[in-house]
Amino acid sequence: MEFHIALTSASPEPAVVQDALFDLDPTAVVDLDMSGQVLRVSAAMTAVDLAEVLRQLGWPVAVEQVVQLPSICCGGCSG
Image (cartoon, rainbow, N blue to C red; front, side, top):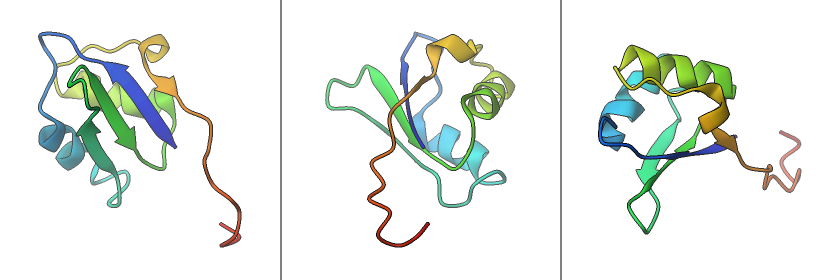
């Protein structure tokens, strides 16, 4: 799943978030969009799980702030 979260002044660095997600999904990728104002997370988890990880990092993000994008999976790999 891909998630977008608008940044706030208390936002952790993308690398810190990616490291924190490693236990839940070692293939997770975290970066910033081109504006630098939105944290993008690609990970196999729910918005609730992601919000909990961010809260553990000291960034209190409500589940409603985590925008889940529609899947771009073509289904070609049957996964």
